[in-house]
Image (cartoon, rainbow, N blue to C red; front, side, top):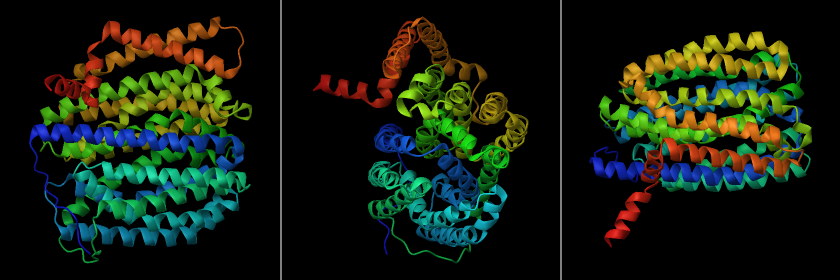
Length: 499
């Protein structure tokens, strides 16, 4: 088998800027398109299934999240970060991934009864055994994805993601209508994974035979192991909630909590990682120039938080009409949980933006230290909070993540060489606009007469959008030109004028 492209990272600044802009547009645009397709299916399925179905699924995700840390993703990061790689290194990484993931599939299949015994829920074993099939796709997703990312080529990835999302969006409601219950939540992502693997393998044209001889793979192992330590600690931080709550709360209560998290983390989980996927290879190609990385990081924070802060705070203040409109009355218990989690999400968003920059500068130990701190703070918070049910678990996020974000900021800014004042300046437009928006929406909400959920929601959304846009126009008009620049609108207008 042959490999279709070279691995050179050479590029001039102007060409690099254009490629990054295209990458952001392709990655974020495809993510939006794929999510619109997926959400049309997801929200239909949520209305069909019960909170208990989502609680059972959440129990399996603790195991899958742990296993996924061992799937070799950290080794593909070395392919992106390194200045030069060759065909032999790619073959070695593919070989590593095949060995790891096929072993993980066997391990999960055999150990599934132990997880079911821990959660005192026998069906968890059956779910985990079928979900072991996920790992067989991992090598054929990760290698082409890493090499495409290295070349800052996100167009092929975008096409694969959209095709996979379409197929999954067909399978999910079909399974729900057929009465498959919790199995819907297994078969739909299984379809997504296999479709994505096939599309990336074909479209990426990175076709090599795997090598199981690992001589000379020390640099790949070294960088990969440093990232792996960070990810293991991240697992403790992010999965401790279900691990702790799974033995104390009912499947119904866990379903309420995890569905609230799903809604609150839509931006954090679905869109910010897409931006980070572009950020990591972009920072890596700055050759350790901290001034460039600092400037790029400040710009990314400013732009991302312009969306993240109003989205999260808006979700918090409009939680009731949103949930009644989108999910229906049976999910009304999620309202107070979403309100609390929405206030915590801006801290979560900022915290996860640091890792691509520090990793690209060759300091994965910083991300590991942050994850280690989170692995202490968050489980302690959950242990105290679990007695208060889903609402208590939400308050654990609101108390733990601001502290963790402060630690992440102190550790990361030193490496990135960004002054705290510059970070605050990047956050100021979104934070000021978000707080004024929240006050405006809350005031209008209190003045409104009782309304059906949909018109109630539409009034709050229009109020929030108008007050936020007006605040930015009055206090930070320059952000609009910056957004236009990122989207390439200014360049197209200039070209049209010149023509």
